[in-house]
Every structure is written in C-alpha cells, then in structure tokens.
Length: 272
Image (cartoon, rainbow, N blue to C red; front, side, top):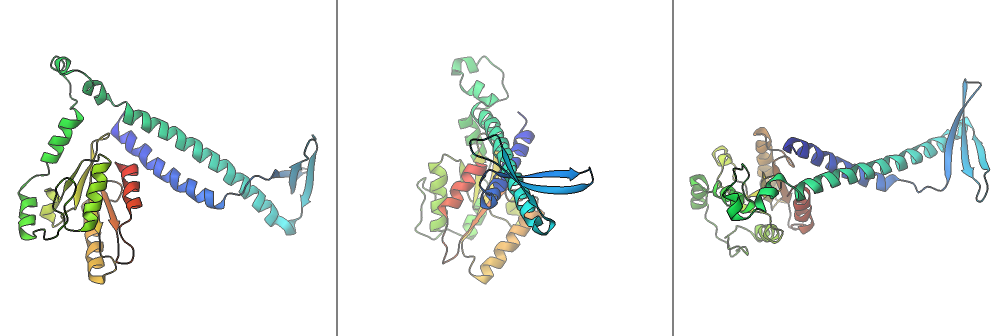
C-alpha cells in the first residue's frame, strides 16, 4: 500500500480518536426517548417526545410546545451524538484493521522471511529491517554532530542502557523507553538541520513505514529564557517544513511537572 495512503489513514485515525474522546464527554445514554418531527398539513412543524411502552407495541407521544423547544433540541442532539459516536467507532475500527494488516503484512516481509540462500537468487528492492536500521543509523553519523559535541561536551553522570552519554536524566529515560519498545534511535544525530543551527535530541525511525522523525525534549519550560528559546526553536523547525506529528515530535517538562512517561508512550504508540 502506498505510504501516502498510510499517512492519510493515520491522520484520519488521530482525528477520529479526538472526536471519540469529545463525544464520550458529552454523549447522553439512551433512555428510550426520541424525537419525532411532523408537518401538520405539510406546513406547520410539530415536535413530539416519544417513548415505546415496555412490553407493548404502543408508543407514548408528548407534544412539545414552542416554549419548550429546548426539549426538542436536547433530544435531537442526543440522538445525533449517539449515532455519530457509533459511526466514529465503526470507522476507527476499520482504519485500525487496515493499518494493522499493513504493519503486519508488509511487502518487505515476503523478502525478509526468505532464507539467505533463496535471497541470493532473487532480485529485490527490499532491504531487511536489520540492514535498513544499520544503514539508517549510519546516515546520522557525521562531522556536524561530532563538531557540536566537541563544542558542547556532555558533562553529566547520565548514561543510557545502550551506553550513550546524555545531557539529562530525562533524555536517559526517553532513550531507555525507546530501546525497551524496540524503536531505533540516534542520540544527537548529525543531519542537515545542524547547518541551520538546529540539533535535535534524537532521530527516531518507524520501522514499519521507514519514516524518520526528529525528537526534541524541552526540559526547563518554567524558566522564561529557556521557554523563549524553545518556542523560537519550534518556529524555526516549522519554517524548515518540520511540523509536530508530520516529521517532528517533542515533549515538555517543568520543575513542578516532570517528564511524563505516558507522553512518551503515546508518541511511540501513535507515531512509531
């Protein structure tokens, strides 16, 4: 399936999740009452609050006066919200099924599962995930990143489980969580952004789609000077075509509100 289609479906999925959460806050449980609208002599609109009597085929109808139009509005809104919720859940389920099928049955898997002997006999554009990850990580090794580390050496006691020397405890938590979830990453990658004055904390890879995201963690947002620099940095990313969720990810923390592991988990689940 085309990556463009996958991206469109993924974006639609995010919007459906937002709509589902919104509806869950406002939806009114079905109590059996519903709105019926009639036109008297095809001209005058009349509203009725209807309810099917238990154990009977009869329907109880109460005429709604114009002065009580809010009752009609509430009934109509409640019915609409319930139907919309069912539609959102249905569409979300179908998209999840498609994306799940794609991620578990990629064309590259056909090649990856072949024996080395059979691969040697076949011409294929596909590269094994392990080989792709090695090449991907290698692409982020370069002089720009080395120069940055020489200019700003890491002087903290924090090392990740993979042995990287990082600049903060939060970066260690992020790196270790990524490693635990088998998300390939490169700490302080050397990339073209370096020439623009930007030095992302991480480069991340979605193995299924083979899409790269840059990730920044802003750790002192309660300090005015730091927050100002962070906002300017995000704006600079935007000017260069990097938007949150598209190819850029970030998290925040303050002295009072530390790094949220839930936020990292959500990023991994949604994008990686």
